[in-house]
Image 1 (cartoon, rainbow, N blue to C red):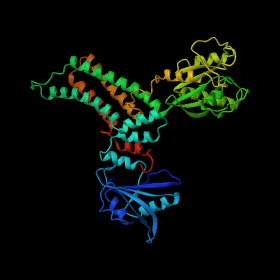
Image 2: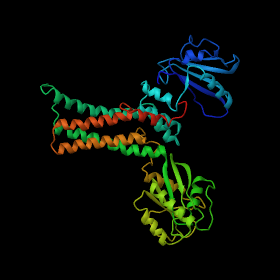
Image 3: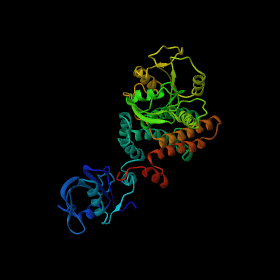
Image 4: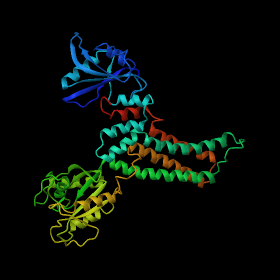
Amino acid sequence: MINETIAAISTAYGAAGIAVIRISGDDAISEFNKIFKGKDLEKVKSHTIHYGHVIDTDGSFLDEVMVTVLKAPRTFTKEDMVEISTHGGILIVQKVLQRVLTLDIRLAEPGEFSERAYLNGRIDLVEAESIMDLIHAKNEQALKIASLGIQKETSQLIKNLRSDLLTIIAQIEVNIDYPEYDDAVVMSKEIIYPEVLKLIDQMKVVLKESEKNQLIKDGIKTAIIGKPNVGKSSLLNALLNEERAIVTDVEGTTRDTIEAYINMGGITLNLIDTAGIRDTKDLIEQIGVDRSIKALNNADLILLVLDQSKELSKEDLKLLELTKNFQRIIIGNKADLTNVLGMDEVISISALNKTGLKDLEHAILKILALENIETRDMNYLSNARHITKVKEALAALENVLESIKLDMPVDVYDIDLTEAWKLLGEILGEYYKDDLLNELFSKFCLGK
């Protein structure tokens, strides 16, 4: 219930200098005041900090604390809030929380503070989801994307699209409801078609850039593929600058996939070093090969490694054919040896000597169209739910174009235009179902 007062630990579990317990609700101040020895918190000004002690059930001092009092509506949840800074020991913060929960206060669910902020109109769903993106950001660019969401910049992008849609919808409905209104623009298909086409073009740009943002935020699943003993594990170790994978001259050393994260050129690569792909009768090795094929099919980017000191083998040709329809970079390893590969558009490296890795980095950024990432406009979506809704709205607008081509009545266009407007509204949370909110906020941290 939103009118209940809730509490949770908002800092990470473990020993630290301080820990923070957050309380929110109509009775947050009055309830905590019952166990606080210090100033009367019900009489202090909002946004002030006060020294005192938490009193245990037997009247003894439980902990020395600093208490921040925040009065509605200028708080995160738009409710009265209390934030208790306790000593950061694992046991003491749990004891203080347990004492708080003896009052008319219950333990908060994961994400419940953020959910209340949304339900009370403090933030929209884009801002709420951006909070978690900020917490889980893997690189500086992901941090920038999340910050734009929190600052409402991303929400404004969607609001602008909805505003343009609403203008068309309103003019159509005026024509339908008030045909006698002389000043209204008569919305014919000749007027509607170019306006809808312009919106479709804008949405396609949003989708294209948003899918790039999603890769930046979530990381690019990058499978290192090749036949046995071409240097896949050596490449992984060179990129990580550590001996993560075992490297030997024995073919089939890597029997399973090995995963690691690396920041490269402002983006995060989720590197997957796979077992060498070849025909084998070894049952264990075959399991590794099957997993390699699965990693290939699920990857955003393929790094196909060839041994440039040897001519293409049957296995190499098979892998070139297998990966031709994927987003891939062909790497010629062992540049320290004689190059007999004879192929164009191959990035030449030596994983052993760690040469050519800068060329590989540039090739990766180029194929992902992220070369100028530092100056790129990040104010687009990055959340899979948001991107799906834009795609659905785009499909609704394409239905409008189809209706125009079929010379259907203007009021038919209004149905799909309104549907597109509502779908974009779902991104902001203007239309929602309880199960959506439960699913979304359940992924948040406890105390956030």
